[in-house]
Image (tube, rainbow, N blue to C red; front, top):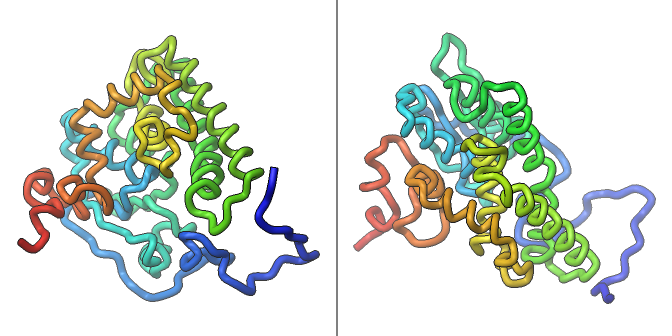
Length: 290
């Protein structure tokens, strides 16, 4: 095993240089806004401020599922927050999410707007608001919640661990890649064993647990994340692949993956969503100059 550099940590760490890597320009050890800018507000009760990362996609899938299930009050405006350009550090965004991470939701349907941040919190808030996609039976609900928060606890090892050191870090560190590849494969095996005996993540019913886990682990086995599919031998996890293909066949999931997306085919990118018709008329291929 070899590392590219030798490093002895100082007694007290100080921020005296850029961290390096793909996100060096936006990483900093302090919170709060960097600039004053108000967020736009549309005409619908729900205002979503996000980008089409796995965490953002969780919420847009949920909103599209709610609308498809007939919950008209789930209509939403989705505004693009370009995290690579630091939009999440604006005063308006920080007022909704002091942690400066997407997604963030503002519910304006009541007398006083309600802010909701952290993707699992938004999923649970919407599920409870509309009475959908969380089982009512106590045992089934507990199972759903367990898997929802499994995702929240596990995905940082996939994204901030494996994804960072395999794809984004300025140097390749064998120990770090091995450590997080091992953990990511263990997590895939956890899911594969669960899905060997269940149609969906928490049982026989489609829930917010599926919506939370799919953009991360479904995306991983479909080859969308970090260019690491072959490295991790993702095709070995046949039950995860079966489940991912099943969810990807849902029109609601397809639409949810398009909202606030800034990469891929222009026809798959709907930077902002303000109406159901936008999927047909406002994708980047239709807005791009001829």
